[in-house]
Image 1 (spheres, rainbow, N blue to C red):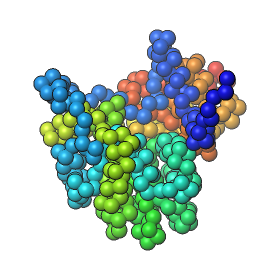
Image 2: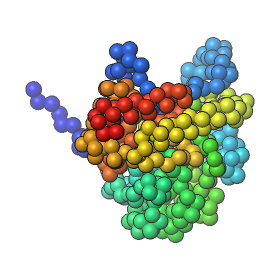
Image 3: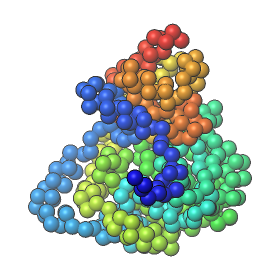
Image 4: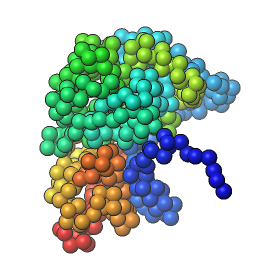
Length: 404
């Protein structure tokens, strides 16, 4: 029986390679297999209990209020608190009424940035490897994607000359710092170059800082303070990492007033509003100082897990190249030496380790086909003893193939 045609947008958007591993992890867990999870891009500790208890009381005491529609741009009180938070950490003054839109996670903020700033056929510049969603959104919105490579030999810092050259044709550049999958913190001189070029050439800078609080050494670079940034920098933010509520799907986009006005208009048609309950939870966190309290508790543990993961890779996989990140949630080792000896591509390598050793990681090609020498290991999702065990099992897999 004949059916209507599928849109070219859907047909031309490739399936991300990481879905193979995510689906396999779910299938293994459904069979009762104890899976060591290095694949999930989320915090490994639960949200603050005090915040959840307060939200529960609010739900029971005010059920109608907490299940009604929220304002399209987000609750005014939440936007006020976000503006205060930006001022506190970044030293930047913004108008909560005119320069913030609360979104359904960082993903909707990314959608709004692209839809508001780019037309079909425009070029979006990425720093690659990068968050897999960026590539997919480029296909969905029919924008051309160009990129500047980032390699482990330079600790994943892009070449400034590449950025200058390719920003000539691009209408916008989109990048994250700290990075996903590399955990790279972009050098300040490169970040400033991007803003300077964008301001001079009238380009948009989409700055994704979802990991801005996940630092173990050093501090976050608020590029919004650079000269001209207030006119060209649009920031994508998320509560998924710092409040550990990725399933509540809450983020926000902020930047120049005119840009945010039109982003808010589009949001009103696309999703109407972000979750009422999620916004209430964020208000609780921010009003009661629970965000700072929570971060003070979890960051030392994440640092311990980072150190365990890094040392385990050095110990058990000596031919891998790995950078010890100062921020973020991931190791991104170059395992090309082992891929060459096994004759396996990165996706198949990761799949076999998941099936045989029940350790699930993501292949580097999930973040760009040219990154197929790497694996992404999330180090915040498991306690130190299981991190060590997981890396040891990878070595066991290699030993059984007689290449170590």
